[in-house]
Length: 453
Image (cartoon, rainbow, N blue to C red; front, side, top):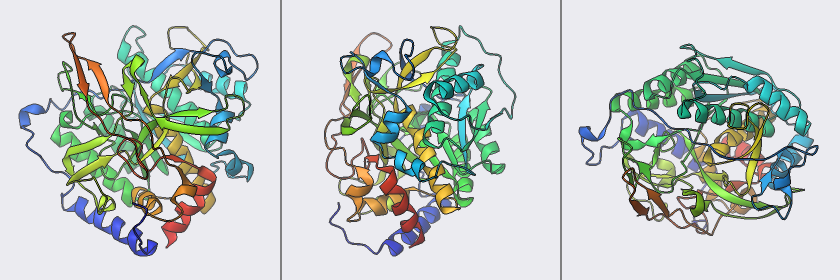
């Protein structure tokens, strides 16, 4: 893939215009033999399933899971910033000041403000401006409802780690009253029509076949409005390999996740990062796949959304949209530390979090840094990423993930097991890790230069 030679100015212009024109013409949504009966009602719920393990109490900024002999390893802000070359950008004075990250989630995390302050005190970070917006009001928090508890964990992870990457950026946390498709769609619409921020992170998803067509059309129209306004869109690609639950949650089938699969969204896959747990010095990464937890990065091929222009001429991609586009650390063994007071260990507790949920808000933070650096929104990101991926400088901007796969064995509701064959990581782009994980200090100037050409 790196052998293609393009004029970057022509490539970015062509990809951007053709993708938007295809969207306006309705080309990107293709019904591929999926019957109307496959869809559930418009109130189908979207899932957020951050994965976590109790981290114990800190000794200063150090946790037991940061010991080389720990059974499960973890990283704090300093390690992730070093591993992905974020720290040099922060050291140069670029910290997200003046930019706004919009995080869309459901229900609430009653202690998120206090938890963020504890997180910042522990790791020596400054407190950001956090706005909590509830366009439809808040559902009273029920600590006995597993769905609400999962969403409170997701909120904690999203807010704290978007803040790690862009510590001076404003965070607008926009909460839906429930995790139903329509409710999340309304807060998306609110965030876009109010033009709240420069970048939107969505760490949730469902089988693309289970999103009601009317709701899916509205989501896509709002993604188009966001793109026209210069907003950048991210979503995590999922944590069950090349599989998703059926619409009745009875079984697991080969499928990709919506909204990550939308062509106007940058889909974030998962890796297992191996870095020095004290310094964050980068060693290597592999495709995230932890069979012991029945978890693996999402990634595969749509059966409903046509191939966008930025994926034309890509070997191995047929007529439909492929995800992922990029990747980030997602493993539990090698997860990130976060404060979450609404979990099983009670107030002010630290956990190790894994899942592609962690990557979407951190990529949003990267874009917030770019916005400050360029004094301008970055906008539709996928054409820029693919232009860099096809360029001779690809290896400077990305850590290319070339090992592992997202084949997964899952349990169905009747107790049976099913193995869903996935895809292998390889040199260059692949559906499990996209173009790879970022080398931020090198990637940012390339993104800005590519955007201007």
